[in-house]
Image (cartoon, rainbow, N blue to C red; front, side, top):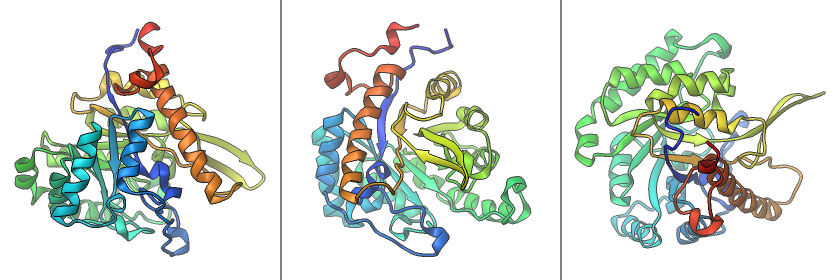
Length: 323
């Protein structure tokens, strides 16, 4: 049996999981230098209701999910909606998102917004740019200059972070190697500042999933838990998102590492699903997102032992019976 086999976590969802319904962010179009926005076909209250219906404990949201209305009145209303449903909130922001600027925010504003929403954590995508030949560009001089600037942004606001007592998580968001995130966290050297490990983003910088998770786990205050199907065909090698448990990622092995190595500050696992955009209409895609979300919550709860609220919906977990 692994060390800390019985360690429990809340189950959350990155709202990007429902991006075809206009939540999270419209990501991935930066290659074309264009901004796209999927129509938001539901409200924040609808999003919270979905979370409660499928058994989530936490919602990991972006500014898009609150319609970029950061007035005190609106944020207080959203906070009450979540609290009334028993759903905790985390805020996800970017510094300079290349394809959806609606999610962009600076450190001070994001901390204030998250505090008003009652969030326990703020996760940051840094949007660092690497040299074009990125496979060996970890900690390259041009990258280090950007990391120093990011260090200064967080360091200059440590007093505000301490005032609110919120955890900070810096992500390997397709633009940072694990070692670069770790460099930032170690240099900031503050108990409220840690990492967010996305379990599939390492592929974008050609890092192995298991190696990346094992490196980052001791620093993690947040996890974007993903599963993808990886395959090759005459057009090349592809990585397509699936429901958790339906792809090629050994989800149990990832959770074993996190249970053994992650600090106590990691108390939530946020699932994230990125389904392919082709092969169905957007209406069919929205239904498939919801279906995959429910399947993922059930799998993570029953087979990986993640979550508290799912017990009300899915019954007993198999995980704690199979030591």
